[in-house]
Image (cartoon, rainbow, N blue to C red; front, side):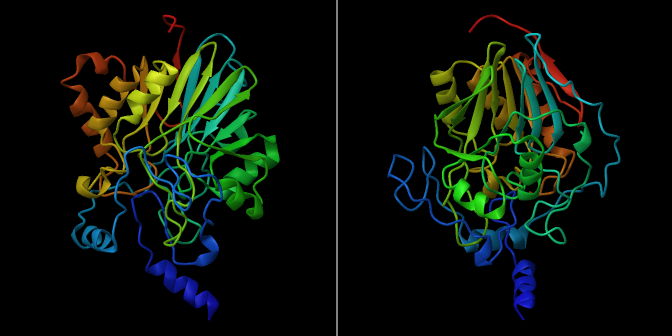
Length: 356
């Protein structure tokens, strides 16, 4: 009977926010509320954005489900994986390899960072239901170089994948940086080496450091734990420069704030997918046009799009994010020179530039 109830709960799951999650009415999936001091973005029970945004209501979700028009996706994109990445990068360049979705390998100053790692077949707590992959990871698991630090932006299933985190922890023993409240969720589930961060906290890793920065989003592992844990982006910085990783985010003043506090970015990794329907997604996911504005706000020398072409999470098709990005860049020559579209499993490099 219990199994039947779980199955029924899964079948009536509502994907709040896109949004990149499988939210299921099952208490064992929920994160407990964070127990910590009140701050300007934590009221003692739930976290909020710099500029609070209203939670989506059940009526909003039902309207989306009732009126949605999904654009086409390829059933499977059969593309061979990229070459084995370099073991280390120590020559003053910043090397970024897009693995899939929001999983990227960032290499600079002898440090290997992986963002929101997900090698699972579904963005879901179960591997038999939920959004399924439309392409294989661009870098084979066995070709991943040693990982020195893992950064996790938030707890949605496409970004915080427990099976992949456990594999990395077992293989490399790398510290796993997460937002406030996530260690209490992950450690009982077998993920070792986690460390909770608040916005603007900094961790030194070898010759680089990682700073957690605000983004505009939300968190949930189920219907009952919305905003119980903190969401964030990261800036990875070393002598070779600064790399911004946006995780999931809507457009807001946080991009300019990151630049004001930490300086202009050399590389910006900015999401562009799951932006439709705009009326529902806009507060949590930037559109490609807004991603271009974010690149300007960050002062990036090189911007790379991510968070598309892996799982069908919004109503945009697999071709639309890049088509809309091209449309936005067609009227912005300065930004056209900044953006490069990485292929899955292939690296983009940025050499030394003017000192910030």
